[in-house]
Length: 180
Ligand SMILES: CC(C)(COP(=O)(O)OP(=O)(O)OC[C@H]1O[C@@H](n2cnc3c(N)ncnc32)[C@H](O)[C@@H]1OP(=O)(O)O)[C@@H](O)C(=O)NCCC(=O)NCCS
Image (cartoon, rainbow, N blue to C red; front, side, top):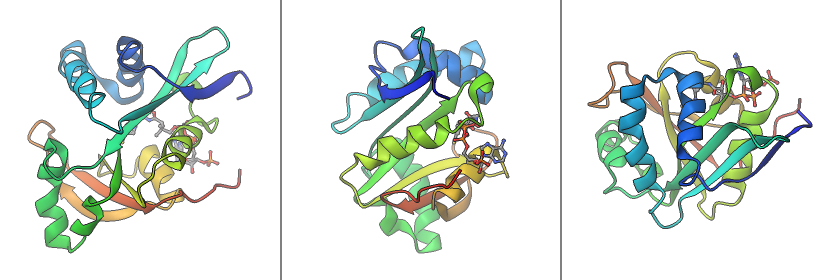
């Protein structure tokens, strides 16, 4: 979409707008937004954490992505590690850039913004590979990640806070380029 620009995002300053996009895209209620807010702000204090936004000409945020270098002591990593160890894929946890969130406003989906956001963010990562978790269903997100070269490192991963199982995926960097 020509009128939407992908570029650096001061996510700490625009966290409420970002969570409003996430609420629409992923489905979050007010209580869940309240829980996510301090988590996002804490993530942004991690050295190497970076965010990009997709912004309309009028300055409205319609998509965002952020991630951080993985550290086996971070909560997310401690939850997924036993699953990856069992699958023999836990080496992916080292020297990895983790995609923590990627969301595009429903009215702007399927115009290539998701790919532009995650590709631009990971292109600037010094790490050799990227990892993430996604709900373990055949969702648009899973389709997008696979097309970019992510494959399953573990499935059926249960986070204490989430009722549904997740898949952990990993891809070498730079991500595969899509022909549109
Ligand atoms: C996942 C998400 C970020 C994708 O954003 P997007 O801007 O619509 O994605 P793109 O337009 O860049 O899509 C790129 C490719 O991903 C795949 N894809 C995206 N949406 C899809 C869908 N609804 N069904 C099947 N494949 C899909 C396609 O291969 C697509 O390429 P194509 O359009 O040439 O076929 C968006 O659907 C979203 O915000 N979903 C809800 C939140 C979410 O699940 N976030 C991920 C959390 S892990």
